[in-house]
Length: 170
Image (cartoon, rainbow, N blue to C red; front, side, top):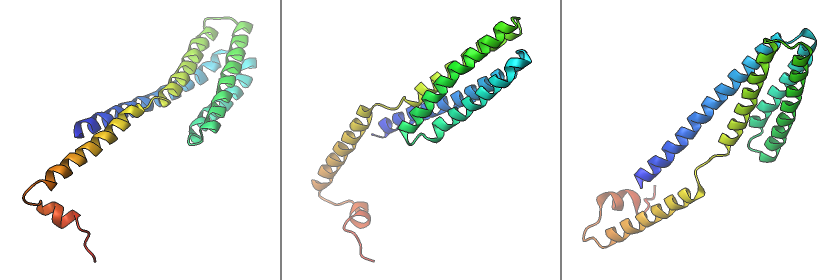
């Protein structure tokens, strides 16, 4: 029983660490993309920076509203729409002034959007329900067998009879 619980907690800790790493990767990707906007012509930078601000606010709102899944998914839809807007503006700005410098923004945007998708998928991965059902059934069976073994014994456990049952009045 202890081994199964340990494996369950180990899997949960691994998923938690992976999610935390994805947060750092997404923040780095957004920061890099923000800095690369400077490589675009000045006329396209203002609108793109405004879209970035709204995108970042929306990404933060997704996780702030997480207990309410419906509201979180609504914010996630807004973020996806803003991704399309950012992409369109970046491509248009890059076409106005094509150069190797402006071309450096597109791969970073792609990475930023990919990490957002990866993070969304990682948030939906949990231990399967069958694991928790099995742990509950195993705990019940272990308790049943321990109680049955204690009932058939000739002497009672001091700990069980003095500490656990019957309840003492205070």
